[in-house]
Length: 260
Ligand code: COA
Image 1 (tube, rainbow, N blue to C red):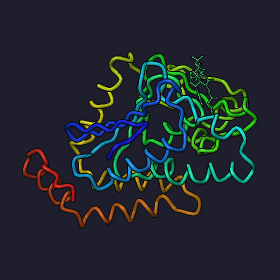
Image 2 (image 1 turned 120 degrees about the horizontal axis):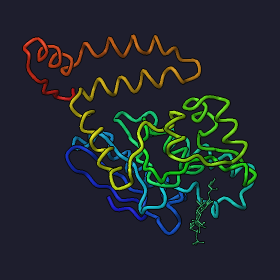
Image 3 (image 1 turned 90 degrees about the vertical axis):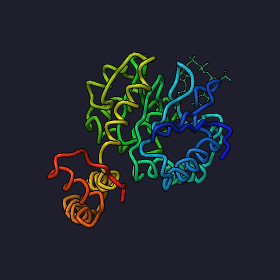
Image 4 (image 1 turned 180 degrees about the vertical axis):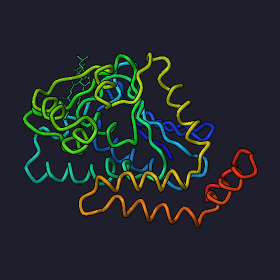
């Protein structure tokens, strides 16, 4: 598959997707959103992909937001379609993806960029990263899940302040808020994300996928997270990975998970 605005690279079970529009600080236009969707769809059943890392091209930006030039003259209807379509094909899609997705935030993550990072399962950041949801400075609000995921991650009061002030926080404050899990010098960012990915890959991919579903269930309206956990827990007992994991433990050897 060839793409205009993203690069997709696989090695040792890790697929790295790089958003590659550095002259526009990797802003998410329609084409980029569609390409990201297509790339993820491709990776769903790809045996060579165990973990996905998303990052931005260049040293300045992860993603500086949705592409403002594309929606500046939109009507009410076009605005709501933009948000609905983006949430469906990219942001919700990543959040519910069956394989771990790590955001490696390598600079500005603003607006849709921070929303993209927040849709990933967790985030690591370089020490030059700056994050915020500045949409109200443009007369609009976050439309790709930011009003929901930011309060989930940092608490309602902090989210209210960040959104109302349209302010930016630096990497260390994001760490302090729990918005990112680790901060590292920029040149070590990808190797840190890969190191975490390698730790993840030692475990059962089937169980990890069940864990993602159960954790996400607790944040969905009308879904009982505890009940979802019971179901996912039970399902694990029917997998070859469970058989291998428990047998390997009892035989005092390292598990070789078949991923089934
Ligand atoms: N949409 C479209 N283009 C964007 C963009 C966005 N969200 N963010 C940056 N760009 C473009 C700029 O228009 C500029 O393009 P040009 O060279 O053709 O004029 C290029 O990227 C470089 O950005 P520039 O503003 O010159 O860089 P800077 O270092 O002076 O400022 C930012 C960096 C991130 C502070 C600034 O680009 C910015 O505020 N971006 C918008 C952030 C935002 O509001 N995002 C939320 C959108 S909903």
